[in-house]
Image: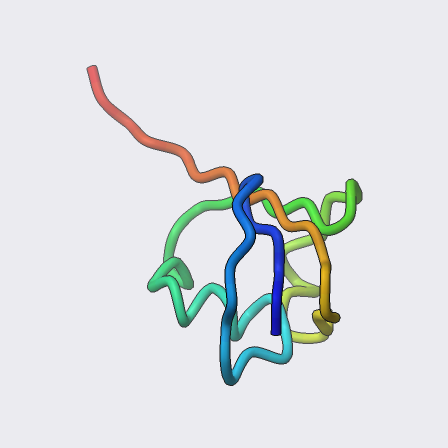
Length: 66
């Protein structure tokens, strides 16, 4: 499936939901904000949010430091 992730077109396999995508990129345990087609998705809905060809996804994760 072709997706646009953080502005870059990517081809991903075996991904049906946002939760699957996070596992693929090893981000499932990170604190994130995900926007799907310009709508922020609640963290509790990641596993129920299905992806479709051409979806636009923005993933923002927080980095701590000091």
